[in-house]
Amino acid sequence: MNIENMEAFVYVIHFGSFNKAADALFLSQPSVSARIQSLERELDCKLFDRIGKQVQLTEEGKRFLPYAQQLLQTFQKGKQHVQQKKKLPDELRIGCTVSVANYILPQLLPPMKRKYPHIQFKLQTGVTDDLVNRVLNKEIDIGFVRNVNHPNLKSVKLIEDPIRLHVYEGHPFIGNGRLTIEAIGHEPLVFFECGALDWLRIHRIFESLNHPPQLEIQTDNSETAKKLVLQKVGICFLPGLCARQEVAEGKLYPIEFPETAGISMQTNVIALQGEFSEFLQAFAELGRERLAKP
Image (cartoon, rainbow, N blue to C red; front, side, top):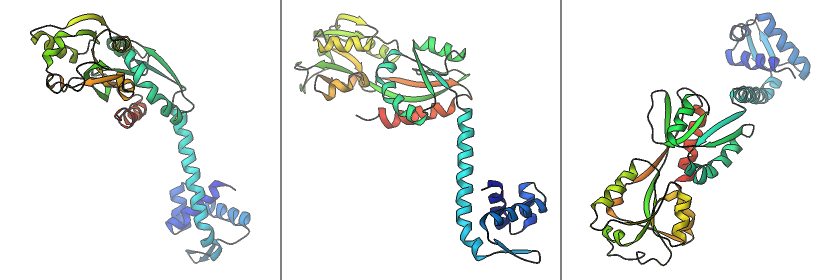
């Protein structure tokens, strides 16, 4: 069945005349009449009664109308979907920090792949400054980085991940209601240093203690730091996402101090201004949905 004939039928009904339908379709009135006649031959029935310049639906036309409208809407939606897919890239190049690669993207990429099944996702890791430059140079399309501001970049907040002291199972800090921040100075400490500004606040807390912490090991890898805590080498300040599974399993325990409240590690997703906006929005929505869960 010719979709153009169906379109002419619906337009005549909507505008109330062949002439107005022809104007809306940028056709001549005889062309619209020809399309209606062709549709009537296909259906083997008369769709309109013509009374002078007025047209009126026949009973057959009234019965066919809802099906014609539905078919036309389905065609238009399908056309839009196909045209949208043509605009999407075949490959999306994503750059991210190591912590994002370990704890964030494994939660976000499966639903993104379901939403965009025809796109290949290519991942690369790096530090924030390097990733920003690679986005600006169009070497990658999307970047997951620390909070940055740049006039040529669109930056959307993905998650604010609280940083807390984590101790291993059986540690004396667990359940100690009289614990103060000074107690950290008497414990061996594994220090995860990510370079973000919020970590400077933790350094300042250390400087304010009467007994500075016993720094046993320093590392820039959160997974290494976490495993050292699990091995009871020391205790460590870690982002929540890093330790979420171990906390749920009772292997690690977060300890709250007023002095460290509000310290967090923010992750943003960035792209060049005016580019890949659909993906920035999709990642941000998934972040709110999946990363905020305890």
